[in-house]
Each structure stands twice: as C-alpha cells, then as structure tokens.
Length: 243
Image 1 (cartoon, rainbow, N blue to C red):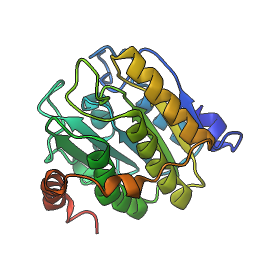
Image 2: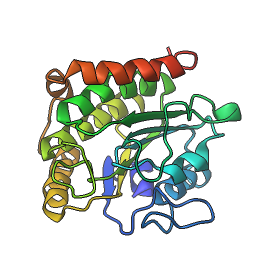
Image 3: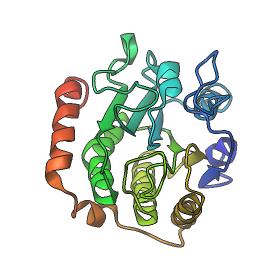
C-alpha cells in the first residue's frame, strides 16, 4: 500500500490487515499485535522508497507503545497519538515527548472517557494540524483503530462513523498541503463488528472522494472546556518545540 501511494499509482490507501500492530515492540508481541505494521511500513518508506519525514497519526483507543518506542529518538518521524488514559498499555502521558534528538517528535494527547466526534476534530484542528504543517511530512501514515467507536465494548469514547470520516478528511487536508495527498492507513483495534463495518465504510468513502466531510464544521460543536484543558496541557509540554 505504501509503495503504491509513494510511487503515485494510488493517491491514498487503506491496508485492511489483521492482526493489528501498534503495541508490538521491536522484540516482543503485545496486545494482540505480532508485528508493528505501521513501524515496519514507515522504515520501509524511508529505506526503500527514500521518503524523508513521516507523520504517523494514531487515533486508536489505546496508546501505540510499540510505535512510540520505535521512533522516540528519531526526528524524521513525528508520532501523534490520541488515546484513552490511563488504560492499557499504561504509556502515553503528556510528558512522553521522545528522547535525545527525537525530543518533541512524540506528541501524546491522553484523554479521559467521553470524547466524541466534535472533541476529536477540535483536537485535530488545534493540535495535530498546526504541528503537522510545521513538520511538513512527505508521507502520512495512520494507525486507524475503531475502538473509539461509541458502541465499542472495550472503550469509553463516543466517536460515530461521521467522526471517523471527518478525522480522515482532516488528515487528507493536511496531506494535500504537505505531501500531494499521500496517505496510507492501516487497521488497528476495534471490537464492535457493526461499528467497525460502518465506520470503515465512511473512511473509505472519504478516501475515495465519494464524500467530503467538513472537519471544521464538526469541531465547532465541541465541548470547549474538555478540549481547552487538553490543549493547554499539550502546549505546556510542547511549546518549546513547536510554534
């Protein structure tokens, strides 16, 4: 999928793979994950396809510990994660920002339960978008977990299929400004079969151009107090790294 996108054969792609990957560490399988698909894909893009800067967006319910640990010293890969916290695997605090030359290139947005479409889109608009536009990725990869779906039995979030479509569109908009729309998604978690089906379908409609959802419109109805608290915490940690 990454090869097709990077060579221009496809504008974007969604790899519908199982098992998921973002919990897998360099030498250990964890959390239903055997190999870290997104990490392997990112390194493949850099080493075989000569891509430089890569943005990885992880909207799964759980923090991608394996992805973070793979790149926490690497300033060529920006890892951005929204996740329910504290929750499995226990990583992903605000203060986990990377190490060495990679400081500032890990952006964690830990959330309490109850965040829905509007709140996620507001965080994407206010945190992800400005940092991503400053970073200027040459490729965007997405760990697309559907366990933030409103009916997921393992989660406490309230994202609907429309919210997933809007998050996809927000990322596509960033890609259009930075890297000629080059986006590749890979499937992560999701434990409500109907929710995963309906939400995945909306993501595919967005990627294929059948729909064009407005992220800003959806973000406008967010409960601002919930969002403001999170944005303030992220800013307090990252304002020395990002404008």
